[in-house]
Length: 401
Figure 1 (cartoon, one colour):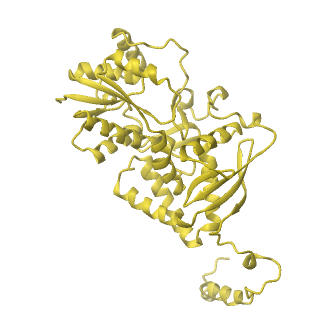
Figure 2 (cartoon, rainbow, N blue to C red):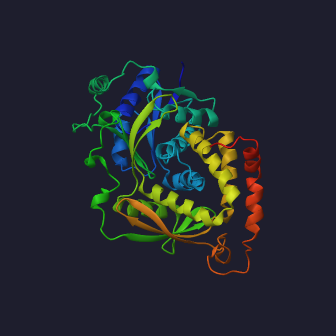
Figure 3 (tube, rainbow, N blue to C red):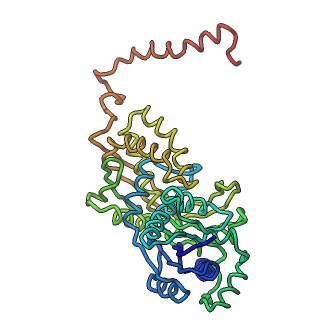
């Protein structure tokens, strides 16, 4: 394959540093190293210096934190997106954003190819490449892990030493991790055995629930059109608000998750996650919907949520079907405005109050006290009509005994 210039999704770690050098040698062309700042803890000056020292024509670091929250996290949470009942899609939501910026840079820099460091076993290769194809199908895609012979950590280290790429002399972590504003994930290493409980030292964003404060933390989140807009009555921009939710959740031990999920490529994977702010936001949002959404609208929306989440998990963020579902989800959010009061305590996030000018909860209808708006006698015909088919089944002897 003939290539003139490549833009590589670059983290500065061992894998992408080796890939950077390998691409330059294999294709005899210039390589631009691109890093996305989506909230991970990183020394970006060091990343730039290492990229240039490893042979990059230039290193571009894009600050995508604001757009990540506003255009990826919040839309997904308006839909209450959750994969297989547990996973809040932290990595899945980040990959299409990274791919979109990578494509933008490639087109702006006159590159004709893009590359990434995802392996041939995981979901990320699909997410990156479906993004490339959807946004710029003319770009060539290079996935080193699927074509090179450097198929082990030892071979990567040997290649790095041979090409004078710095290899940090630190104690190897017994797992791999991926971090952004929404979560940090851990997999591989000791976690390949799903019987193993994660080491407490692994966790980074949350304190252990048993070590969280003995006094509960109360907070109020204000929503407008399905998006959080204020915390404890103080209006905040999306990035600042979500960052504060992460802090509060982490301090109270909220957001830890240990699960086995089904990868898109067909295998099961054991992962451990920390998603403190995301857990708080989803619980609050879902609770507000209980008083602001019509029963049947809520049921239809909830029936679509698994499909919506699956599309994101599998890498179809830029697909027409995801965009169609997003419009449907957002249509339901027009009335989701109000305030939810939450109690954070030792790993638990519990709604303890909700109010809204759009509330469909009417005390004069729901009260157990005397009222003059509901005729309880109406229930007699209601029950008889719903029981009619059961009665006919019984008369035919079809009723189960």
